[in-house]
Length: 138
Image (cartoon, rainbow, N blue to C red; front, top):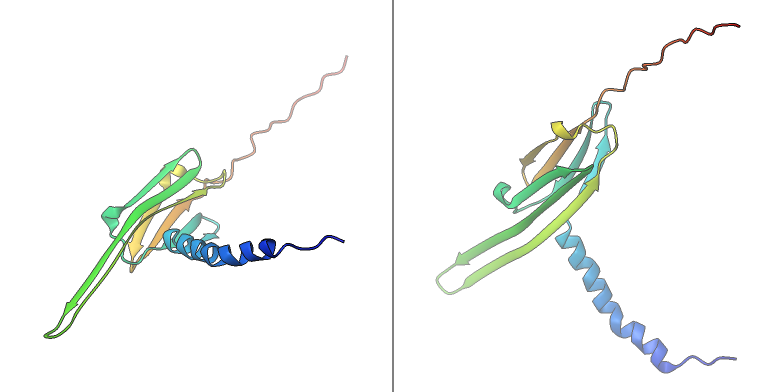
């Protein structure tokens, strides 16, 4: 019978709060997003509250859409006997591989009310270009 060491049970408990904090930090830095598909296009929406349009960089290259940016939010309030200041800063980057029937040249984006919507049009299905081949005998 192998006896558990008290040190082995101590270490996971010590690091668990840090692991949870890292997950929460990653959620904040990597904006929440959704992807959907329609007959004519694919759409990706990302929540980017407090991020200005000029702080968002969107690129499409080799079948990958990359969104990166920086959040710079400041709020300051003053009163006769009080002062409050809140600041949030941070960089983020997300990338998405697009399906092979995507038209990369037609990608467009719209930022409204803190939500970025990226539209990737679909290429029309390729027409069958096969032809009948005559078979000759002897």
